[in-house]
Length: 114
Length: 110
Image 1 (cartoon, rainbow over the protein chains, first blue to last red):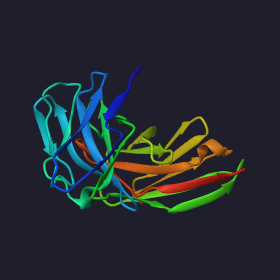
Image 2: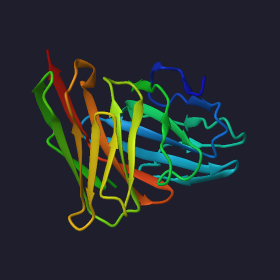
Image 3: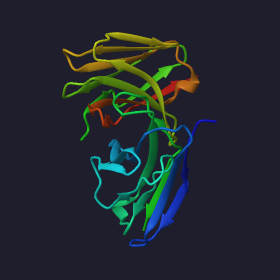
């Protein structure tokens, strides 16, 4: 089944404790991205990747890192999480550039930083 | 940056009625997309409409695009309980990025 998977689905952590949220897609998509969703603000893009080893900042990249070493995986790294990073995070992928193709979204990761 | 804004923020309708929501955006676009999100779950793509298209249909969904007014509308006809969800428009700020609005929450009452 074609899908985007994220792990973990729920995470409660403390300020400053490094964490990684994994994202994997099995559709051989070139484009992958991370979004955060906060009430009243819709989805805001954190980072995106157009292919292996090619990443770029979205609208809200501060406090996050990403890497794209393999085509199927695009992990999101929070080196030192803070409470303002408490949010619902989504990974998405598409066959090509986001503006030209539909995005396939993962199920989401709900992160709480205390 | 949030390019698109949906209106209204929330909509409550009776099953069988039509639901219409609007999206306005600020800068020129190549394409506009609509997505649906069921309570806290991942978004699901509904329709992509290109800037040279004025209307597009998919099942009970009808999307219009007016580039002169920088606006789009999504019409859901003969609504069902399963249509209860949040609906988002997304515009391509450039080819690399999508900008989502804050969404319209639709509740379909039985």
